[in-house]
Image (cartoon, rainbow, N blue to C red; front, side, top):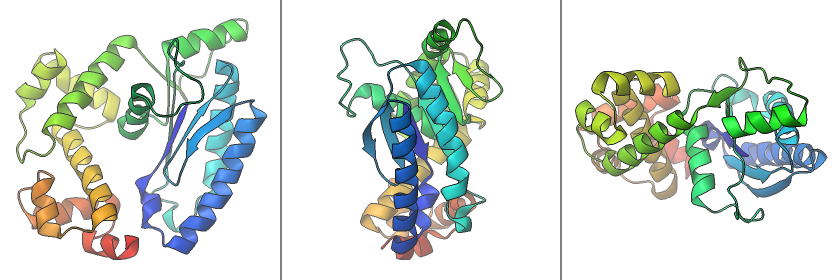
Length: 254
């Protein structure tokens, strides 16, 4: 299981962030332990954990989601979010390792799909088997199909290769995913809630957010390096996405 919180948490000052981390991580640890799970990695933005069964993982995820709204600082109440994804460990994958392509792919599902809670069909199948064919609530949990996973993987591979270009080619994106332009547009919209261009822009902004947090680059240079045609366009887009000017964010995260 991968739990992904929001980069909005990085808008907090160090004191508030430390208080939140302590409270949320304590809550996480107790819930995961109660479900006989093991925490592989946890920080201010994400948590990776493994569980012995689909049932214990799903129950823990629901409890963590319920607890999250009570421990999140009030100043980011309107922006807080917690996205979760569950998938069975691949055969032969060490249950004590949090570093692998498997977990990276789960993290991307958390970060960029529009659903709060995503599971694979294998997890749903295991849950049914463990609970005498009981059904999960698919209004709360999105069950991603194998075809959707393959499409999303191809989409992310394309985006990760082309995000820094200050242009957008929908036909090129569609070709990379193996679908027509119209089909690609529909699938991107269904899974992310955004148009292909808006999705690419969101990816650029998230990359810029991390770069600004880590290196405090100049705004104009950062804009060019992240596919924006001008510093003005970047500043406006950043503020619309995160509710704060990039210059102000750099001061807070410094």
